Picture 1 (tube, rainbow, N blue to C red):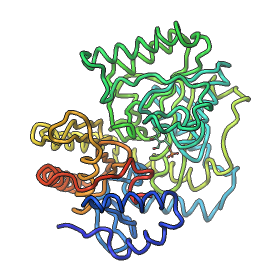
Picture 2 (picture 1 turned 90 degrees about the vertical axis):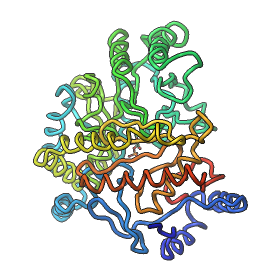
Picture 3 (picture 1 turned 180 degrees about the horizontal axis):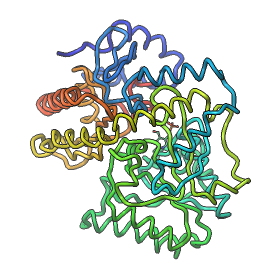
Picture 4 (picture 1 turned 60 degrees about the vertical axis):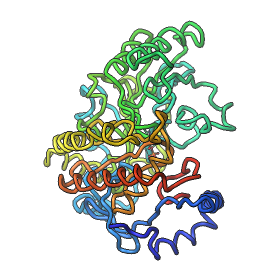
Length: 466
Ligand SMILES: Cc1ncc(COP(=O)(O)O)c(C=O)c1O
């Protein structure tokens, strides 16, 4: 099977968007250049309908959904119970700030936080706002000026989160001056491990950089407020850190009295097979950032959890925009947590993750274009390279993602040389295995025929190309 993408209806609507949407000119230029060299544009579609493990495009083509609303639909698309809960909240409260659902939700969140040590929660609309709020909270609480973040990290698209993110050297272009309070440290998992070092040695080097280099040569330790880290680097390449690295960060934070902020916007609420990714590492952060899955895939809900003293008495750290913690968002989160418990969702996710890793384990040996399979639960990524090269290559990754879409499997490949997959935590086992079979066919095709998608620089916003 191979869908001719985009289908007629999707193509017509995409054409209407080109003159108005962000980067339409860029997209048209890249397409013309690419076509001139005989490459095809990345396959695109627009979702016409979504249900459970699938989405359908405007033309009625069906896709297995591994894109998952950018990892926001933990229980599959349009979960009827969550829709109903949100609908009830809309009917009863419309939008009011002082609705009653916040309180049962913060009680429940406190009960599921790592070590039950983060009992306070502050609502935000998006992961971006929540990450910014966590940073503000840390600066105000410690009354210090610097935040340490990592290369390849992604924390959002607001001005503050752009400053701490570093997934490539361009993402702070023209804004460098705004990042005065940010110290970027190397993340030990990347393509760029110094020659002659193995992975463990590079982890040690990166911890030395935090523990010795920054305090001795960059900023006195008593002026650093916090380290913000993703315990599973999703956007930056689906790298899964080792216990040594995250436990090392915890130890260094304790030594210098720095706060550890775990950005669990993508990894949290079951994505890795545990409620929080930090639980794989036996680490309890001081502040945790949550979002995405908390929405139940229906209505945005995000926020920051923290230790009692950090969030319980810190009036300088103002937070929470108008639409933070809406009735619908809180209703979605409450229903999502209820279903997690009732249906053993974390166990389901962990089992599915094991199945997936088993299915993909042989790929690096079998296919010259496959670099690594990087997974933790259902945080799944496969890196790609050109057959004769050791360097990761996003044209190859994009061609695989393209071949997958044409076969009816929707996955992510935007800025990176990986295909990333975030199935629903309760995806049907057979559907997940079918998707991975189709992915393997796609890998085989790209390995035999070479890349099909060329000449597109990193895609500004992924799937539809602009
Ligand atoms: C780790 C991490 N933090 C923050 C964000 C930003 O969240 P949002 O897109 O909801 O603003 C993302 C989004 O992908 C993320 O992956």
